[in-house]
Length: 349
Ligand code: NAP
Ligand code: G4F
Image (cartoon, rainbow, N blue to C red; front, side, top):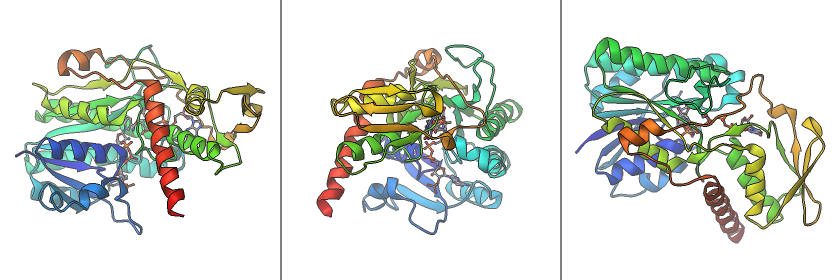
């Protein structure tokens, strides 16, 4: 039985990865943060399963800012594979907490890699790198060799991590890999990221639970959105490769935030028409002219990433990885799940 350590196990990706590895027969150890309220909702179904907790899943308190505890966890768990997913992962928030973001998303990676080197634990290491590294894109579509141009404290911190992984691989012969993942979403996506913010609000609006419009920032930015469960499978494949390397996972399709909004309303058979420009632009339901989208400059970023689209040919060729869920289906999966949640909650009340 292989043993895996997942930092960020309570996050969107960590929860899907824990499920996947348990299914594959791994003993999974997850690092969680101490918090004043419960932060394990995404893994509660595993945690509450007596056949899983303390036999297939083990949780350890820890924090990416605390080297001593990372060392202790590595020493106790002696993992075969480490998936470093813990991060302050919100790009806009990183402009407000840049130093903390650098501590966790940059130095945190160095702390684990150095603990691996010092303890000689011999694990394979996966780093959650990101398409945000490409930032002000130098090439379309982006591939593994496209030059980076980060546009936020988050992306700059992740750039430090990216090169630390490469350096520890070359300097100390560690099996350390970057997965450069483009945006991936799911019903478990945090509610402050644009996709989930939209799907939750669209459901409330269409079911009469919200009469005010959704307030959004830049709806013209373009993203390459995939489906998170497929991407965590890609993470696992990265660590099963014959030799350590860096891989890009994406769908090779790009869509605007505006299209995401339109597709989410289309789930309910509604069309949107737009009036005004820039901060004055507004979206209305074609059926009854209800105002449903407004621009709020609060959500603008000091520097934006305008266009992301990734070519995943290397991952397809070397790992046999390919995404199946594309844009329309992804939006449907997310809206359907939020609709079910909404209806279940309303039944309870
Ligand atoms: P997420 O849902 O925000 O999860 C982040 C996880 O990190 C949570 O478990 C969080 O714990 C934990 N964490 C945050 N700060 C920590 C700290 N100081 N010490 C220990 N744990 C900490 O993010 P995600 O979408 O699953 O993404 C997973 C990773 O992939 C992140 O590194 C992200 O930057 C990267 N990434 C994501 C995408 C994407 O589209 N989702 C694309 C490329 C790269 P709490 O639950 O306690 O907050
Ligand atoms: O959903 P977002 O916040 O995701 P973003 O910034 O692309 O970052 C996500 O993907 C990265 C991979 O490329 C990860 F590394 C990162 O950890 C995270 O998971 O914003 C997407 C786009 C942006 O252009 C943003 O300006 O949507 C735009 N947007 C417009 N209105 C908004 C909003 N974003 C958010 N969060 N909230 C809005 O109201």
